[in-house]
Amino acid sequence: MSYWEKKIIHTARGHFEVFVKGEGNPVCVTHHYSEFNHTGDYFADTFTENNMVYLVNLKHTGNSSKANEAHELSMFDAVYDLEAIREALGYSQWSFAGHSTGGMIGVIYGIHFSKSLTSLIIVGAAARKYANSSSECIYHPDHPQFDRMQQLIETLKRTDLSPSERERFSKERTKLSLFHPDQYDEYFPLGIHKKMSAPRMNFFIREEMIFDVTRELEKISTNTLIVSGRYDVQCPLSFSEEIKELIPKSQLFVFNESNHYPFLEEKLLFRQVISTYLEQTASN
Image (cartoon, rainbow, N blue to C red; front, side):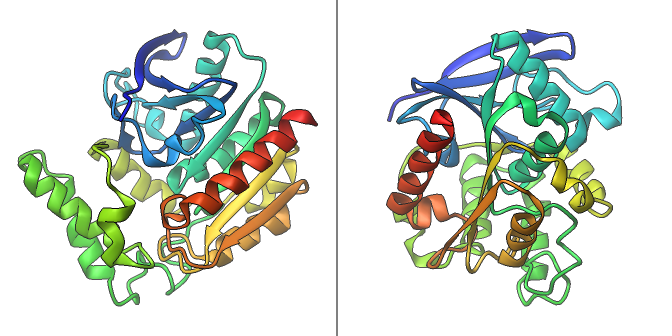
């Protein structure tokens, strides 16, 4: 396992801890409340074979700047932070790829800064609140595994967990979002570990309740690939289908044997789809 190179990027909006790996055209990856480190990220690793990947710790995660005001923890502010990082790195454009809440940030990025994006990749995400909108979502009170998921989220916010306890609860939480939960160890074989930023997670829970940018999706002018697992319990397929309908230059690819992690559950096919797409958009 090769580690990611750590860099601190200084911008007018604060400094940001960024982990870099790979060579080629630049791809930015982040997640709303994950705290990354030198071990990297399974989703971000998907892009490192043919691209220079920048894995960003947003404010209040890792060694990035703390937020002075609550709004700095919002998805909207995150997009402006990513733009500041892009400019500091000297790129006129880069691609953005986001999974789950990273994909939600990506949608906002595309709405406001399509001209900064070579392409946009949205995986297992939504353009509006999903938790209370569909009983197929594990965050909906009517979902059979709702209570256990909530217990695990609250537990993982605790700072007094031992590493082994954190690993055990995190593993159980992830298994709830796998099409084949018994294959967890096969999907997650590497020593990649990350934490959850409680302040960012707490802000997101409130922000998600009023989140809806569907009416603005038509503003996204960059080439966009939307990806979903057919059995995604976190952001059900219907939300990806909605995004596809509303973004002009978009295409949807559905993974038929995946839940929320198609980049692991159908790893080879996912990498093939992504590499083909990035090659096509780079040559356009």
